[in-house]
Length: 542
Image 1 (cartoon, helix red, strand yellow):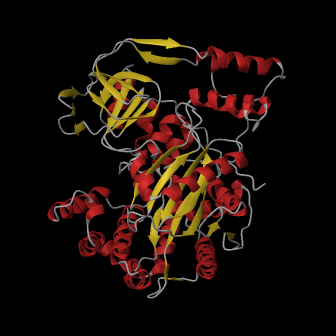
Image 2 (cartoon, helix red, strand yellow):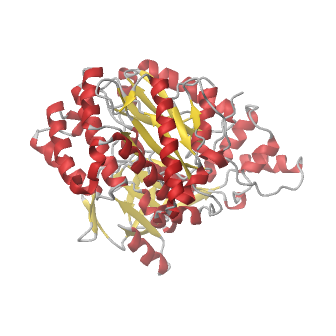
Image 3 (cartoon, rainbow, N blue to C red):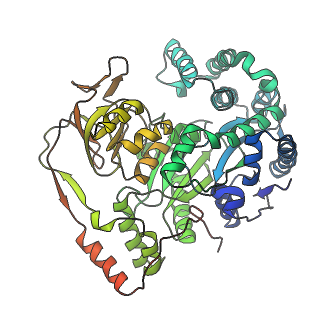
């Protein structure tokens, strides 16, 4: 089976329909000379056969993985599962259109016991090696074996408490080695030979990523976003770079412009000493801008330049996933940023003014937005908020409190608007997102997958509301000093991150100047057709 190679001096450009938008954009970034870890791609067309369990498809998968790993070993000078210079890989999904957080990813594949010792030899960092091992066990256990994430989270919490640490970032190598041993016990007999066999890990991870195409959340998302014509996902296998190697490393997500308001300034969330899933899952709060500037000044400046280059190459606002390894910046993904309708209007106008797109192209990008209904809603003298988080998607939402998707469905079916309040930002709640008038989470970041989905749906969203404590059994929540029961009214401000008990008075304004400019474009243009589906965030290597 033909695999597509990216980086390592062997980049091949293919369409998003063949290898998914994520891999197509990765290849284009490599062609632009951006720092992209080498990768190879198994095609979209293999997805349906793997899901159907065809024997010939499994042989093709196995052959493609073998050829691809040989390419990565040549490109990196490392060997998969080796005791001296081990190669670890990520196994990622990627459909022809972006589906943020709906499909699966497995990180640190190939981190066998032999590879742990090899990482210690190669890097002199036992903490990094054992952190990769325990992260692999968590990722593989949840994604491939279907184990409950709470079991892993509970063991981490127990060990953090026993060590007197504030978080797992403070655990030393001995504690992480113990954590890996405990988590291996959690995986137990379910893992068979995979724990010690890098090739078996890789094959199982690739099959799991393909099969995630049929997960409930992925099917729900495709239905909501009218993407049911998509043919499946590709699988991208990429050499790991390590953001979890200390405070000179980290993982993050950056937008070239604010996707909530459209303001022409980057929005960057980065977690030091972390891997990408820490950020996009919303499980960890990002570090402050000051901490990032102190720890990684060169990487911060380089990232700003990369964002500008990608925006010029793609002629659109970009959503970029990146890792910093010992001060070196690596770009793992770029795509067109999901944005609120308000941001879409401002961004389209600004891109026309900057000469990046024509008026006709701007009108095409705005074709699906109901401009007649476009308003900005503000609160009128709301008083003191009950709690404050981080505004992730602008707008005002008022509704009855629901603490899970099932409650959101029940209240919505009764004709009531709903505010969905959750402990964390899980894309498994996509059905509840679609029904809600607004979304609030206790943890998470502006760049988490759930915040992206909220913006795409045009829903107000507040994340990182640390004062929110939800008791799912009692079906009530605590907001600082105030109690909120399910079914009670709550109002949220997705711009300021503020939460208020009850229903608040609002006022609305229309962006008259922007709408007048768009009307002028239309007067100079002919009748418009609805924009066809295209590759998400295509980056041209010009």
